[in-house]
Length: 472
Image 1 (cartoon, helix red, strand yellow):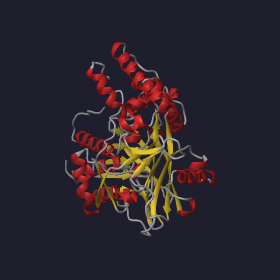
Image 2 (cartoon, rainbow, N blue to C red):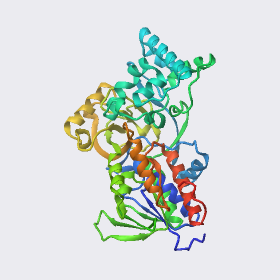
Image 3 (cartoon, one colour):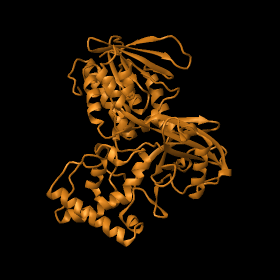
Image 4 (tube, rainbow, N blue to C red):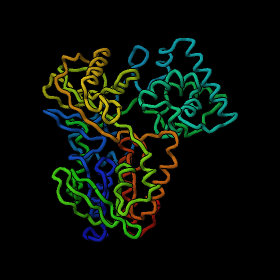
């Protein structure tokens, strides 16, 4: 396909790492591509904002090297800005801090003898039951019990999952465990012993656990470097970027997207159309359904209203302390926050240099005290940071709040039929591909999201060249 073929244009909705990397692949191959992003900067959930003299990441986002092709491409784009850092994550567990993912020996040290015995016995019987009489769990609670046994579920998962997601596991789909929750690495040692006597776990019951040792890739200006580098390469290769633009209509004619109608939400400018021969959507599924013109049938819009997201809020803090943590980040199970990161330990440049930056992550609901940054929420954060010995409240000089209402797709109980209806309806639009964390309603990490974007781009190129539609 010729690069100057104006009839074959791709529009990408959403400028997170998935959408950006899809645009990167397209622009590199000479395909006219336009990215429409509602925020004023690119990066999506992996964005980073400069507030005052420092950058504050919207969570802990560092590049992995699992996908060699994507990593090598990103390494070249980041150039000398890339900083290598060894993974050093901790989890607050049983009055101490242990390496994350939690290891078997550490888990033993965190349990009394009776509880440990009950958990091991429960795991044994769960594995035996799965071997002798396999069963299909109805909800998240049953899926966790199937995976770990009832005592370990009650001890380790039940309360934390309820607090984190704002609902008990009985109200969540079993798919949550299979598609989001990583295996508890500490239990793997027991499962290996059971496997030696023929009691093996069925594959695919949970996500692979995180690596204990790994090299991550970051920069002195934080997570903003990678999306900025990709965006710059897209423009260099002829792509067009529209930050601060909201897609108000995806115009469908004859079962194909003909154009995307959008406006600059910063200036409230006039609506304008971007002609489209192929559309890749990485925005939330309810959002793409809401923008379809003509409107989707009532049963589809009704299904879209049933899909929910759990918002996240980040309190980025400038702290008058040279160092607050002795690692990159710590997971907490019993605090108002679920993770605290210190990006300075990964190479972030902080001004003044004798200060540090903390990234305090919390799940919340839109409009609640944490989301609004109310004094009560800040006080709770300060209290817990002091209790953990991270910093004192008088050392906190600045607080910058970053919010995202689509932090995590919620796999609540019974969501599957609604999701299937939406996916089925979008599949009737021949040149539309909805993908990525939001567009796929799933939980990829950063490099996996970029791979999803690359795959979507290749499918788009195949479609524009007249090939088959493998993803429909």
